[in-house]
Image (tube, rainbow, N blue to C red; front, side, top):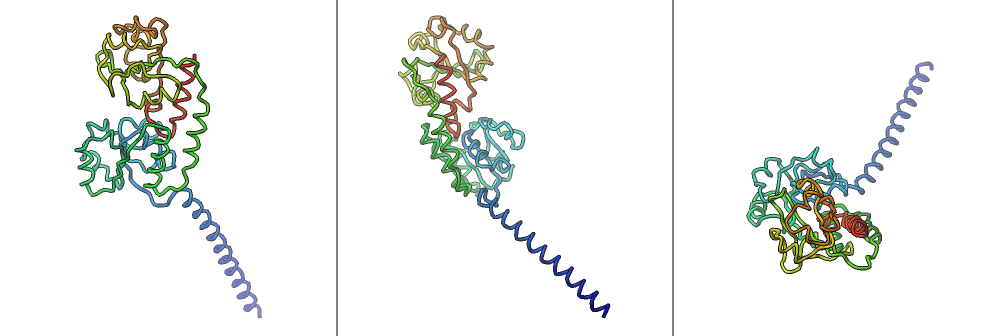
Length: 294
């Protein structure tokens, strides 16, 4: 009888343990299911060749899947610590990309050369080359396109943030004329014409481009400065630093003849933020709006 009672007791303990194990397993499965809905369980090894695309990937929670990025992928800063910096898209080789054994290559058609795009397509690796439009709606479409490739269905928080940020842009009574100068030291100065991402951000912020007689970028000349006569000179932080700060900009021939030079109205912003047209486009417009309003 004592043996029977002992066996019954052992059976009860075993059944209880199994029951507890089942409950634990069920609870764990539920948690994993929720996580899967938030971010697909399937992961990639991604090479991103565009800063805005990299921002979207990180913002969607896939930053750890990035194995390689281009030089414009500066946000978030943590990306550079985990993904290999492949350099500028104009100098990136297909060999450098393939050495990372990617399962997905992404970029934009305006940044990549046709030759590199062709090599990427022939590599056998899944690739998505997006068309980027430099407008708030274009930024939203880029977010949707990247999310689609990653099978990430919930990206509404990113698109809603763009609208919320743009509401913070305050009207400026008289739109200031803004000249954007791209600088890499005193010997490398380019001025922005029409159709550039920076021009679009200037307009969103309540300003207007000081130079409209040519498209894209051209070398800066004293004549162009004086003709444009900007109220504000805008630069990337890195560009302003390469010239030694505001004093260095004021030494550029022709600057002292402009309203911007006379009033020392030289402002700078992070390059990726100002020209990226990713999830932070509204933030960029708001920040520039504040600088133009001072």
